[in-house]
Length: 158
Picture 1 (cartoon, rainbow, N blue to C red):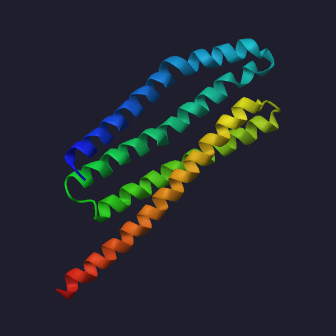
Picture 2 (spheres, rainbow, N blue to C red):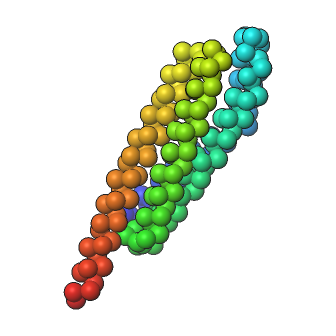
Picture 3 (cartoon, one colour):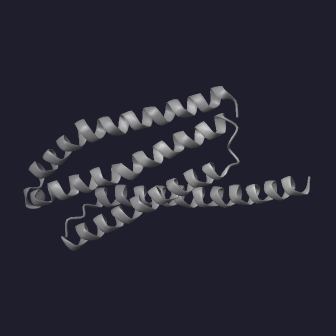
């Protein structure tokens, strides 16, 4: 991969991270206040939902960091290394953690009879996206592991 391509991908990851951080700091608290005003019967859920959303941001940022590390390995011609496999494994774990947190959160909102259809659609979309990312990284991880095995066998035969 050319250096310009990895640089643009790194820039995209930084932009995603900055936008996500800005949304968490400035948009989410205001949104939760407005939701509590519009639905006072669910105002007691404002803080738990907000804290849960902030908890899900942690694995998201860890996955972004691992993606940056993976791009660094690609840039330094270490794409086919055990380090890349480990980065993919961490991204997969982060996606699975997001899935678990959202499924628990949606289940708790259902048990409180507070799951708005719009929130449900967004939650299920996030769960689906995280599942796709988890599945994709698992496939890439296995392919990379197989490529490393073939590479080591070829190195031994030479």
